[in-house]
Length: 230
Image 1 (cartoon, helix red, strand yellow):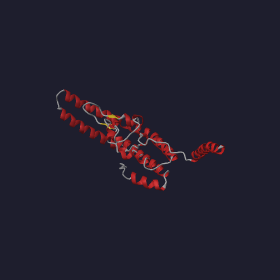
Image 2 (tube, rainbow, N blue to C red):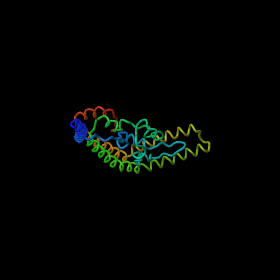
Image 3 (cartoon, one colour):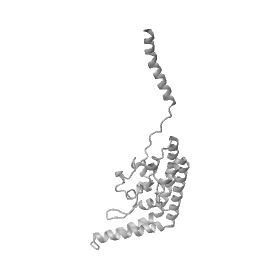
Image 4 (cartoon, rainbow, N blue to C red):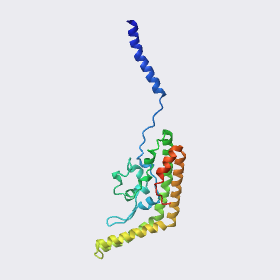
């Protein structure tokens, strides 16, 4: 009888000891990562041009704060094609979401160490991109200013009945297209956008260097869909 009671006490203790040992030998799981975060997006030259918002009947031509001041990083926690935040922001409405690398990273079964290294690469990339976007804005602000002066003439003509609303819209469409082309042809713009191209290439090479051979195969398959303008 005493033996049975003793066994009854020992068995639960033995189970607890075995459970604790098994827990101590387990590999720590990879922490959950929000791969929809805007910290995983890349910007190309199409985004830069789309970031110059068109002149309309209700607003002047302007540089989007969410791009050129990099407000995108604090605008939302989940940047994807279904995020309602992109509505009303032209460059995001036209954004190619194959450049949301988080969608790719999610499928690579990354280790925690890889995620940490990739976060560091993305942070360095964005920090390098910010001054280039500021330089692009500064290099073209006089062109945008001149376009807004022309817009004022159009709006005055509309207000004074010289042209119809339809004619004003057509004049603004032409003004927007001509201004965007002038910005695109600006030698400073060409130099800066070439630097952005090189920055994007370096980022992709650096990410690829962190991956295993199996991950590289998946990475190559998914990134080949990205249509870079350079």
